[in-house]
Image (cartoon, rainbow, N blue to C red):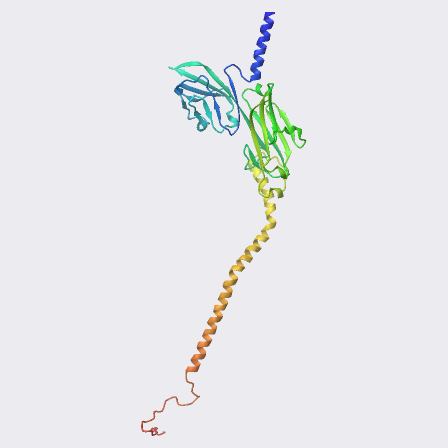
Length: 336
């Protein structure tokens, strides 16, 4: 009978360990959304963190991140890591690649102090399909009339956490209402992934959906996703495509825009021509007026010259005869 009780007690301990998502009393689970900052505690911290070592393990190969209180420069996440004053490990701008097991060790005189401190980091991340060139983990620019699928995934080092009792992924609206109650949304879930599929409407501009992670009805973390329509997106032609790559997304997004702008091209050309004519016409009129004034001025000068210049009849002697002071007629030379 005692053996049976011991077996029952052992089973309860194992079950409790699975439900809490930990493999021991010193293990800790941390849930975080991608894009946020996280702090991983080291409960066996000392007053001096110069002997602190943090290592990371996900694929059965441990990688040292902090050694002797200093960051290792050859790690991919080097720039995003800092060591807190309490020997905690701080990670900025968490990505889905940061999930895994983190171990904190303390040394005194080159001898390990206490036991290892294990921290399991679980990252909640949302991706969209079809993707957009301006999309991010929290926002994307798409147009109404298109079908969009949001995939919310919990990246977990310990797979049992996704199957454990009490852990739940849920899509809700801005008011926190479960979207499974709305027939407009098609929601499906499989272990650590829950997807939401719907056809976008005009009123969905700036609409927010939220993927929540709860454990025993206690909210652990959530990811907000906002739909943002571009300018004149309501006139865009819906395009049905998988668009698995960013390059193909840019192509399909550009085609409707070009189709919308093409009819306006002749109008733009006419406006440019009219504007140019409006600028050149006054200059042409001024040039014509000045030209006429110059011609009139030349005609006036020519007429004045003709009036002041003496005109002699044909054959008349143009030599002036000198009259003597005595009043007589001057002698003329005899004709030959």
